[in-house]
Image (cartoon, rainbow, N blue to C red; front, side, top):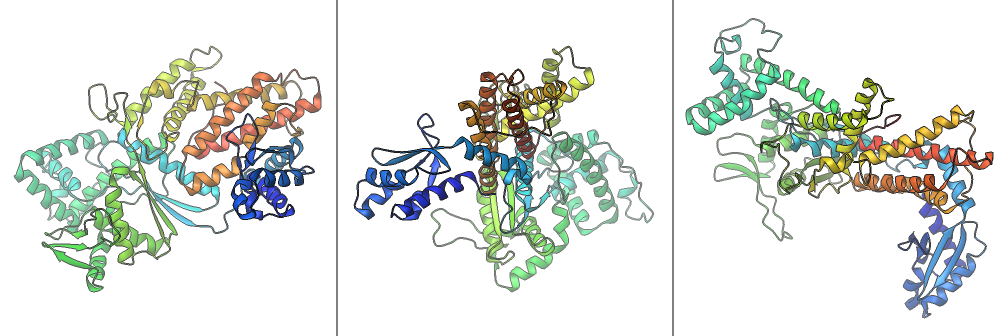
Length: 588
């Protein structure tokens, strides 16, 4: 189904052609003066020089050809040469009706179905998720859902930090505390215990303790580096203990991500590519891509057109150890071999832009990816507190993600319990949905690359540009539809009709922008565009609701048309919030 703007442009282009002018001058845009018109065309201004005519003359010629249009109720030429357009209610109703009857509300399938990998999440095992992990998870999940809805094959990968010195630190601390554990007996040949010798709480205490010791005690750090080497070399007990650390951590991570309604198709980590790094390094050396510099192995990625310094991409340190660059490049190589993606999107902190520029250039220079493979850096800004600094607890520490979600859940539950008709169970379930909407919408309504203030009070408000406001709007629509059915109305037989008032038409106009919004949000990896769309649509619906006595309308045909419009509005809003990663309760 063609986008409404394309249909409108096609009509105006035909009028330009019929008037003797170049068809391409008929491109239409949404009006920047909605008080004057709904759409506008500025093509007459652009054509004035070519046709040696005043713009208003061209505009008048085209407006004359549009007088009998089935699309426009008015097409007015106004000085100095704009064409102001209003669509016919019959044309708009027909378009919205077709949306209602079409899969995905008329969203066309992509001409080429891509295979896309989205790399988001990126937590380190054995560490609790904190608020710093929020943006990657929320943005990545939404970008994944939008791309899937658009019609592409999408694989989400958490890309765990599960290798390197942090693992050596944990193993070293465990050995100091419990040297009798069988994992540290290198002569042991039996089976290792199935149950881990620690809980997630103990594990989360062990890592910061070990990290602190290593900074103060060189001998301790040396032990940790040795433990890391043994692990990576395949020492049996260390590998078994490492698997226990991964198992306990991943189980906890899955629980926390599930609370955020965030999921991954792949739970791969840096360790998954450990065994292919030697082959990749050999390949880069043999092909002449990598060379030694001050003992380290590097690939030069600087280009002649660079206006800023781009350092070489280091593949191995002088002691032969690998780095994040190494594992990221090996991961790209593995993805290209096993998944063969057309595009890989990295949802990471924008401060890592230079790092990823190096990695992407290195991947291209060393031909780890095809020339046509898209490597996209989707950098996000910082989530700050009201003081403008990175969000912290009241005590000044980094807040656990679990704690943040629990606090907002509690606040929403206290608000919702004010409704005496709602049971405790329903109030708890509803509070969870509203809290998640508050957090996710509060984040996603901002352009990803921008820093933003995380204001719990503002985000949890039921008024203004917030998640709860969107949910209240959906709950209001659901309530009207329930009452209509309770009064004997049949929701299956209602038929959408042409608008009889300006607020009704305005709501239809917003609905008609659905396909363009989804396409744009996908192409630009920009969930904030969907947030802006549903906020405008919620406002349009609420204006219509306040101006219209829907359930008491005596004209049955008119009432049926309004209910059909509400059904479509609810379906579109619920589809959009699902793409943002949250859902609406039946009532609030």
